[in-house]
Structures are given as structure tokens and as C-alpha cells.
Image (cartoon, rainbow, N blue to C red; front, side, top):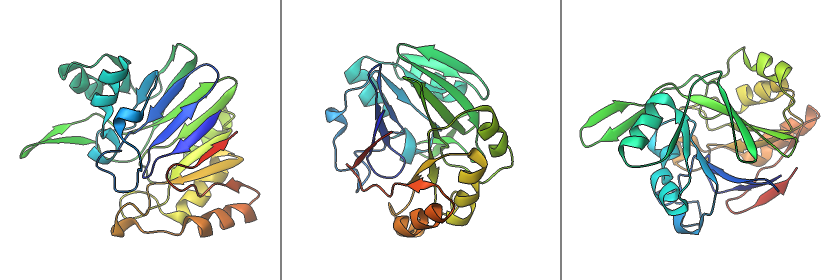
Length: 227
């Protein structure tokens, strides 16, 4: 499994069986370094509806003629815009092509801005992606919550992608605890340094992970890791 980071919370995952992208906030992201037109995938996976995660989901799905996986209300919104969708919800799993996704709890809000109005985007979620006998957990935007222990107990997580930006999600201290609760051997920090309000030191966070026996990957946009 190869994971490429495109800034903020966008991850491209490639395996022998599939190619998917999480939360493709690319064209509006000053750090992504890639155009949505350069993305070729089998599916788009969304953790929630906020624009810095929803991003270019509709354009990528249309160009690739592939489905968008999202919590029911967000999936319905995407369907209303002409996208093929897979309706998911918390606790549910679905196998499609060469991968399986399972949606988990996250503690965050979720909405879509249209003009002066806000549309409810369903609950925010984390996503367990399993392909070629490897499992990645993308926690989405979330606070620390105690059931991360349960997620770690019930799943063998090869790599966890966790927000560290603070202010809008958990910060480094809580993310460090989350990594231990999830029993993840490897961690990619997400959702930091995109904007001044969420400035963090990814290298320092990964050094702290190392002290706990966890390998951290403070990837720069465009960099990859194989697990």
C-alpha cells in the first residue's frame, strides 16, 4: 500500500487492487501541489462535508466516472449534483472492487455552504480502508474520544492518519494519546499548517511518537510512504 499526502487531509492510496483518494481538498489548498485533473482513482472517500475535505470530490468523481463514498446525507447531496454515490453511515462497511471501507465515529461537525445557506452534511466520520490485507484508518476531523480504544481493539491498523492542528480538531497531545489507543504502529499527521490557525510542528509530533515506539511520517505535500 502506497500513501501519498497532498496537504491538509488529502491522501491518495494505491494498492495492487485499487486506487482511492480521501478528502480531496486540492484546487483550493495552497499546499496541495497537484490539480484535480491529475488524479486518477477508483473511488473518492469523504469523511465529512466541510469544504476543506469535500474539496474537488465532485469534479474528480465525474472525471473518473467513479463513486463517492460518504455518510448518507452528504452522499445524497453528491447524488443531487449528478455523482454516483455509495451511501454509508457510522458502523457500516461496504466492499467495492478491491477494497473495503468501514465508517467509524468522529466527533466534529459537518455542513456544506451554498451561498448564504448551510446544508446539514450528516455526521462526521472516520474511515477504515482495507485493501491487500492492509488497513489504514483516516480519522477525519475529530476530537479525542474514548472509543478510539475500541477501534484499536477490533481492528489491526497498519497506519493511522490523525489531525494535529488543534483549534478545529484535536492537537498533538490528544493525537499522541489517540495513536496509542488505536494501537497503530505507524502514523501520518494531518490537518495542520494549511492555515495560520492550525500551525504545528509535524517533525516534533513524530519525534514524540517515536518515544512511544510508534513510527511517524511528517510527509510534505507530494511525498509518499509505503507500508
